[in-house]
Length: 260
Length: 191
Image (cartoon, rainbow over all chains, first blue to last red; front, side):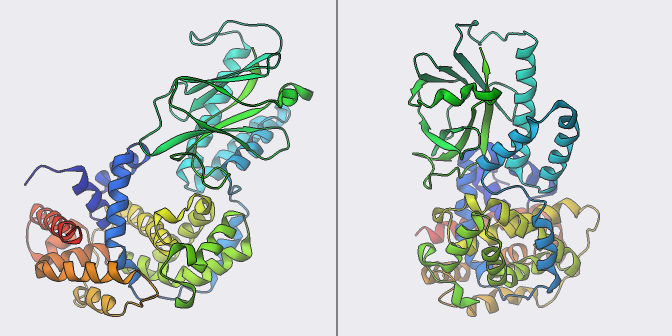
């Protein structure tokens, strides 16, 4: 047999004939390989008339009610909104925190929605990282402690390494983002969002290709008000940023400000 | 149902329902379900051939649609195509995951005729006529075996092993047939 190409695998993925192991590997690859995702999409488009032309079969009436019953357990649609709400959950008093997080995780996993599962992973990593900071362990890439009024947010990916560092200087009203992660995949851009307490997420624009970038943002009053912190998230959006003004892609990095 | 489907994503009434679903509007989601569930259920049922399993998968598929509606954009294709892709992916993930436990699926002698019937019944409102005619022409250009095996796999969920049993040939031969068929289809569609 001739050597297998990525396009062969993409074609058979859409055809449905990959074995269990091959399909699992392809699903993993789809999460990280934009070229493979493009090939799969092209095959979906080529073969879709075969699906769209099939005769409909009425589903039993009870199915809708089962779906409707399960909607209450589903997270909020907008990933950023959900992020803010989950964050609010974890900021309750320590006694309830331990029991809340597992519930959340169970619900999110049961939704079988990959980005949400990844998001939980990111949250867990973010929480553990902030914990490390609290007990005084400094990782080498972090800047040294600075003057009062400066803050830093470390945004962790769902994997293991650090993705972005954000530095906020209230005094000079400067926000600087430093990319430590790889560049966004071809055809995609990272977009930075800020979530102020009790407000909807606001885009701070696409994060460019530069490793360090100044970002325009002036509403720092909320950074330390009543112990509430600004939260930052980065989503993977189509090139040029979200076309809708709301996050459309998965949250790949997230984190809260901590005092530096 | 076909009244809700038109050929352009931007003019497609399902687009509005999908956008409202993305905003968490359950009434819109209910309408979206009513407008598309029979199509999705037909796709799933043909692949898994088990009513109970198809019903379970359909539920999961609509929960995915509810959760991912905000990620849809028209560049991904028409809303119905996008939903069918979700349904197919969920179905094959499930089917290939459980295949080790239940290897045998009864072969229906009529199966290989389905794709012809289906293509003949295309509504011009449902999909882009150019796509339909192109695919049909290219399928017609391939060998009978290639046409049948692609149809049995794509529409009826046949694995390579099941196709090997059906045609009484080794699995590797099936793999070669399928890949050859896909290459021929691709080359033909790009002409």
